[in-house]
Image (cartoon, rainbow, N blue to C red):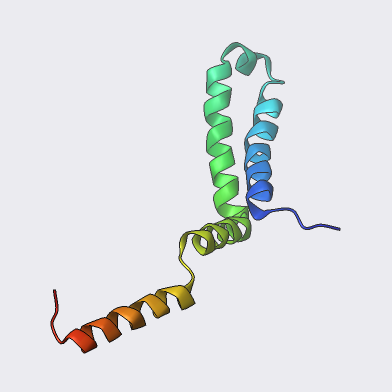
Length: 94
């Protein structure tokens, strides 16, 4: 079975952390009338749940983004070596 991408897992869990409390609150007649208040409460509950329980998926997503953003270390080192060799051969720094 293929493993799901961490970004997809984190996104689905964050949406569920909002949608489930919002759906529960919409069952109450007073919050059906003030749906914007239910949305605010659901957002606060969703943020709280994600801070408490979604640390590992967030770490996986962050690590994946960082690995895509940082250049390959071997290429970077090779560029530095070429520049150092050019400076050493010329003897001057421009």
